[in-house]
Image (cartoon, rainbow, N blue to C red; front, side, top):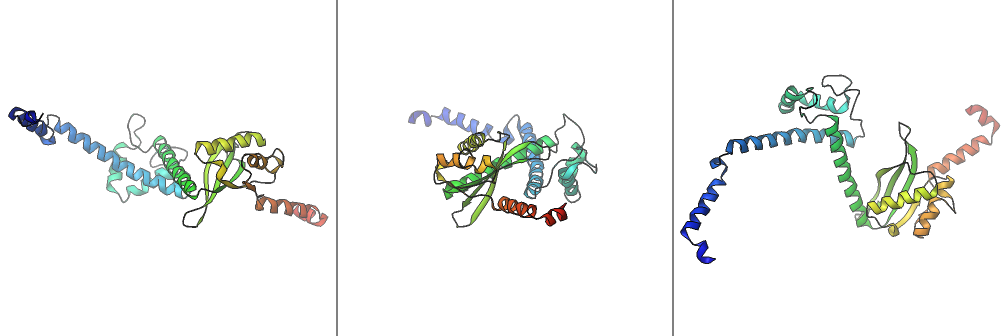
Length: 263
């Protein structure tokens, strides 16, 4: 092997190989340069797209409007922000002039498909970071509530509370669980399945808080009792806001004058 490495013919072949790896000496050097320029161009476009997505997401603003036409007053917040950037950023202004409103088949990276994909990627990144914080804290509590969205699709809101390693309390929304039924049994399966998916040990749960509905707070078949059967240390605390609402409703209903006033 030593003799082969020091062989003059081997060294000459090695020099030629290294020389051919030099971009300027390659037969496809121009194609390679063009490819690198196109890659860098795409990165510069997506950098601006991601920043707009992060800006809108951090403020809970909607992305899309009635159409995806640049220049339209009803094209939504995302394209509106892109149009705003065009006034001060020559690069994105040139990109929009060349590729905007060209329709399908012409990649502009400004479509709702691209935006929604980045939203999902960022959501997964945020969820992973939250789960990492929960595991570092070890102990946590859960808050679960069923609520319909604007399209009246019922979903389960899943929130986790924990104390970070620096001692600060954290309450983090994790996800929406699709309609899983309204019985304690179905909700238990949804909660346990979600914790398993996130690789969070339910035995480290130290608290649970829901509203006062029987399927949630019931001492026999409610979600809180079913979770306690899995982990007796997961103490149940009724939602203070919901309890106050029930007290207020009962108080107002007990007075004929107040009932007439509210009606």
